[in-house]
Length: 380
Image (tube, rainbow, N blue to C red; front, top):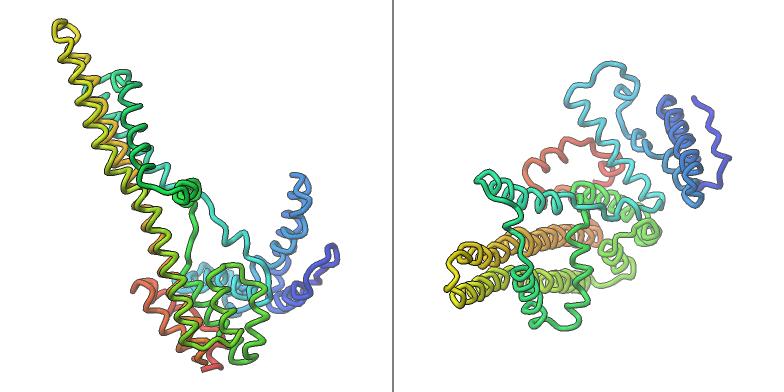
């Protein structure tokens, strides 16, 4: 057993208890966790992140705590894992999240949003392919630049879109663009495991036990759903409230999606208008034949701007928002059914089995292969 010194910081009482349990079961992992904690906290000091030192120290101590639930033969094995053993060992990450949530640790950073790299990468790839193809055909990039077509297409598209909006929708535009770039993940597999763990708490400790779990849950919809259960709300009324929440969220998202779909419809039309205006200018100066070619080319730049921006900016943004809205709705429906099952007193195993319907067949198989925690089995 490794002697653990966690007196360097003022930590939660559960931290010391969990580390002692880990040291008893797997001294090597416990020692590794101590080293990670020291390195992380020292690095935070060097970077001037004084307010994060204790947080990172505690995170380092507990980052592998899920190995408490791994079979002992895997913890002591020094052989190369089989594919099945590797998948089993990788599941310790899920158990780490469940244990930390159970003991009230915050998940604010985990549940935050990173950058959805596919958005800029997709746009860059699309425009790059168009430009490279143009160059390969002997074109010059300078011939694709036109201030007037730019003003007609972008100014006209934005203006036409604004006409159909209210001030509330206009104020929501920065948030919509932020949502497009945000990479918020909804891990349905982890959510099922978390709900199964909450079902164990509910059966053992009742609603008071669930109320204590609320402190460690920062995701708004799950917290709201559990709060309704803890408050003793009638199951039918709980479902009605949550369904209304899901519906209004989807409707709010739909309004944002329609803004970019509208822009995607206006842009090609503005491009055609710009081309027609350019041709009018060309025909009005037909007495100078040597200028006809460049003038006609400039006129068609507007159509290019309109069609390309519609299909590489506006409509893809609308599609991305719709995909993210669908993912959020699926997550919310899963949470609603899981929380209602907890309220109805369903066993963790029954809840787990019912919620697998929200996963694809491949992910269902993956979840079934995971070891079920002893507490969930005993509460059948």
